[in-house]
Length: 165
Image (spheres, rainbow, N blue to C red):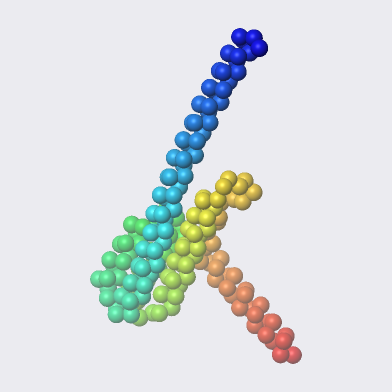
């Protein structure tokens, strides 16, 4: 083997080793960051669930001070640029203005369920290996949810009527 071939081989091996080391370090760094983000999001979802329970209790007791504190917690934990999140804050405001209206809590609970479901789907999507066939999960609005729920109710009612005939 000539000296040129050996030198080329050795330099190629060194370059390949350096590239592999850089890629390995980057992958490891990405995994650590991803793991930390996923852990923090898990804590965030748990806190949102707990705030939901606290809000229900404060509404039942008509505790306006506690309701306003919970509203402030949600304001600091939700995205101010999101229309859906803004509507959650507005829903809390309607609860504060009329704490005896239990239907407002039901709307609020469904809005939070949609928020948590979307965040969970995003977390699963981000934790999965790169998959270009699956776009980022889209968050369903409360209005879309109500339309779907109404449609399902009508379909079930129609199926039940048909089954009785």
